[in-house]
Image 1 (cartoon, rainbow, N blue to C red):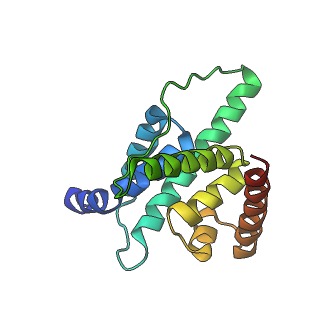
Image 2: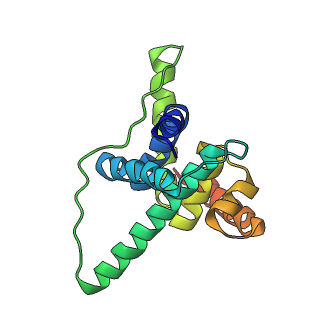
Length: 170
């Protein structure tokens, strides 16, 4: 793949991919690494089919890299426990028209939802993020995660049920 074409995909989908990486990793350092690795892998693979969904392809690469990192971390923890320190808070900057009160209420609600989503098991959290944050279809998610569409639907259903219950309690 030419560097010009990878730059085109970075310009078009870079913000979305980075935002997704932030949600997965929950800190900027790991998100930066995951983001860079995602585009590096895309560059090394050679081509992105523009006729298909390139954003979905890039998100799939990010998820696969993330899952591999989780697997490696779990294996290493079996050998020796690792203590991680998270210095950065997860925050997305958005432009809004409206009063300060509305913005604060909206921001509080989003933070509340993010905290609840963060408590979900990884399998459900990744599906929720791909479906709602990245607007991926059930079929795209199934293809990205290499699982049946029914499993995606089941995880979405269970995750929404858990979110609804936790939202009602808080």
